[in-house]
Image 1 (cartoon, helix red, strand yellow):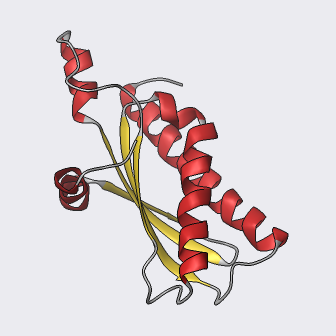
Image 2: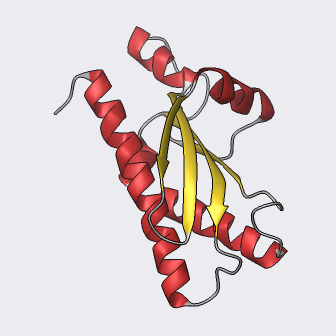
Length: 134
């Protein structure tokens, strides 16, 4: 599920930052528990469907080619779909901060996917630790 504009503003104002980037890309992420997570903790019925929501920003300043920007967004969404964090009520904003000029080829796609997976794992672990789980 995608984030709406007010949710992105809330993430920018109050979200926890995390960054990761060893390969051809560097991401900055901001994450917060979704408002429905607070509803579920209080015992009230959640206002929307539970689960992670994602917004991806791949600025034209970082990737000139639209095909590459769309690839970053597609791989990020797919990583969230297949990741365990999707079952948590967590809002995530991924912002591409550094990249190579071209993200073509299998190796570039795999390193992009690894960067997104690593960042989602870090956010998920941080959130679990904050909630008092292992």
